[in-house]
Amino acid sequence: MSASQSAAAIAAARPPPGRVTLFWRAFAENRGAVVGLALMLLLIVVAVFADVVTPHSPIEQFRDHFLAPPLWQSGGSERFLLGTDDVGRDILSRLIYGARLSLLIGLAVVALSLTLGTVLGLIAAFAGGTTDVLIMRIMDILLVFPSLLLAIVIVAILGPSLFNAMIAVAVVTLPNYTRLVRASALGELARDYVTATRSAGAGPLRLMFSTVLPNCTAPLIVQATLGFSSAILDAAALGFLGLGAQPPTPEWGTMLAGALQFYQRAWWVLAFPGFAILVTVLAFNLFGDGLRDALDPRLKR
Amino acid sequence: MIRFLLRRVALILPTFIGVTLLSFMLIRLVPGDPIEIRFGERGISAERLAELRHEAGFDRPLWRQFVAYEAQVAQGDLGTSVVTHDSVWGEFITLFPATIELSVCAILFAIAIGLPLGVIAAVRRGSVFDYGLMGLSVTGASMPIFWWGLMMILVFSVALGWTPVSGRISDAVYVVPWSGFMLIDAWYSDDAGAVRSALSHLILPTIVLGTIPLATIARMTRSSMLEVLGEDYIRTARAKGLGTLRVVVVHALRNALIPVVTVIGLQVGTLLGGAILTETVFSWPGVGHWLIESIQRRDYPVLQGGTLLVATLVMLVNLGVDLAYGFLNPRIRR
Image (cartoon, rainbow over all chains, first blue to last red; front, side, top):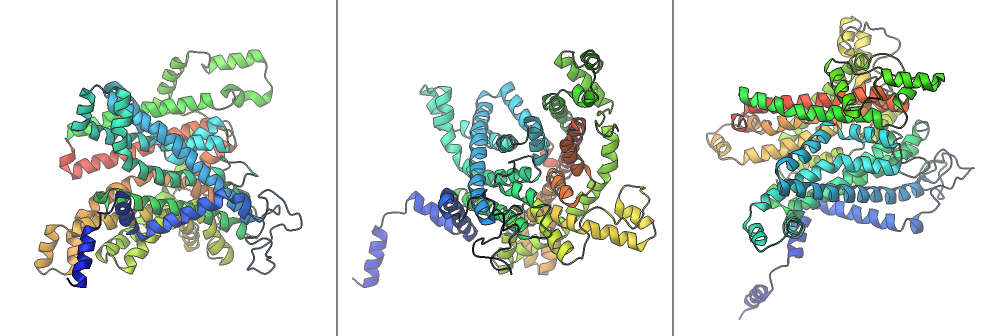
């Protein structure tokens, strides 16, 4: 037996790759997605260990260092790597705490709208008839408004605060999940295994959550990832308009709003928070696109 | 075709009523009593307040107030601004041309750049150009446009001094406001400086508002082209010996455009939402700027009427896209 033959035999004897391996291979094919994942992990680590990695407190005001430039510009110092804002707060530290805030915003908004949307979508698919029409009509109405405008209206009603901005963004993104769950649930309901489970005596709740829902998760995971990025973006836009987090909260959009009076003199108070928003949203979008391709090869183009 | 048309039109009626219900609720849910907001600062007595409340119909049952509101909206009465005391419709219609002008320029910019880029990326699939463009397109779609606009101002207006920072035209030129569209009015003013000023004010907001649609259109064109380029009839066309340019532009692009046109139609909501941010950043005197100001001034009738108008507009454009699609593609008429 030659060496190449035995190598082939060993390869043939190796167990087939598991689901995780197969998924990772499909996912890693998309280089952008891997970059997105790496950025996401970095952001999460930074956000979790914000207390340890920040050089200063995000709200401490250094009275002798108003609008100090970043390190590489003349007048910059190692003490404030990305400079300070108009009241002498360290921008880098605020950005790092902002990362924590933005990820929490994304998490809370997605959790809220995903849960509510899943329940509504399942009810619409299972109940059918008037209930279905009513739920889907309400979603259509929400979709008619440009998302930012609807969020603005909701915040106008509830009052400007970070919490209310999160509720507004969750309501705005609700129709996406409801439609998605309803469509995939309707697809599954026609399958034999659902009929079989039903005739075996499973109640509606069991059918909904433990029979049908697990088979609708792939598109939901993708939507939730992309929902993360739009939640962060919309919450930042509300913060920028003065309708989201209020100063001195180190939220990126709110920081931009605060920079408006000074940005022509001090570009760094403007450039870095926006760049942080861009990178975060980009990371989630890249990751979400990669997930979609890996989970559903039919959509791949 | 007529049945399809009637069905689609009938379908938007309940949506419209839902939208009016939402805007009706808005004025009742915002903090503060609407009558007190309107007259409150003048220190009127409690009896007079009750009288005014009665006159405005705020003491009637909610459903009757809603019916009255529907009748009012049906007659085109969208209320009066608390701050300026002008009718909401009047204010909207004066400011709306500014928003249309900006949105039209933005979508034209997005199509003019996005469509060819998407086609080239599809034809050169897997090339450096393709990867580069797709990377840029995800970046564009992830852009916080309020920051993007400010960065543009910082670079092109402040550092380079090429473009003005805000507004629609320089204070130094006077243009007769005839159509409300600054480019048209400036053109008819026979003043070359006016046209140049209007254009230079328009360019940055156009790019900023057009960024997300540009990214979407480039991406959509690319994937739609890739699908069509794989079809048999394209191979036939190539086999006949037709040149690449002819195959791509005449044979492939025409069919690939159908989903792209739908995507362009669906950008209206994105544009109007983006206009709120773009107009705020550039102090562009349009509807988006007006809505944000209405919140800051607690001018809730304006927010109510403006929101209703914008939502109705999106609904009508979506209907138009739907009808056009049914007209172009008989299969979906059902």
